[in-house]
Amino acid sequence: MSRIDYADVFTLSEDVGTNPTAEQWARAMFGDVPGPTERLIWQGLLGLRLSRGRSPDTVAGWRITGRGEGWIRLESASWFLTNNLVVQAAAGRVSLGTFLRYDRPPARAVWSPLSAVHRRLAPGLLRDAAAAVRGV
Image (cartoon, rainbow, N blue to C red; front, side, top):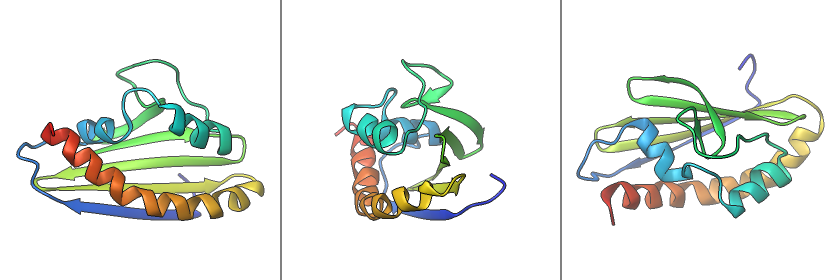
């Protein structure tokens, strides 16, 4: 992104018994397709344009726009903001970074209250993903 107006990163250090890739972590967090809650938040409230159906080029409807050794970047946009999620994975650790660019004035007003919910939910999302990759 040319500019970042909001950023946060959450990290979980936990041995899951395997060495999942960043993409495996991303799919454990978000699934292959968005569920009803994700659709409500991502499409309903944020207006994000998500792909439909399963694809090797998407995670939960977000386009995979970059990947490398130990990381994957997902991107989606609406008419007023652009959002990137970056998942980094290393032995015993996974991080989820959220990066937004406010493309039009409503973005700040919409994201400010949602960001509080996001910051409350993100740690649990990482813990749930760890349980999923462990097979629990």
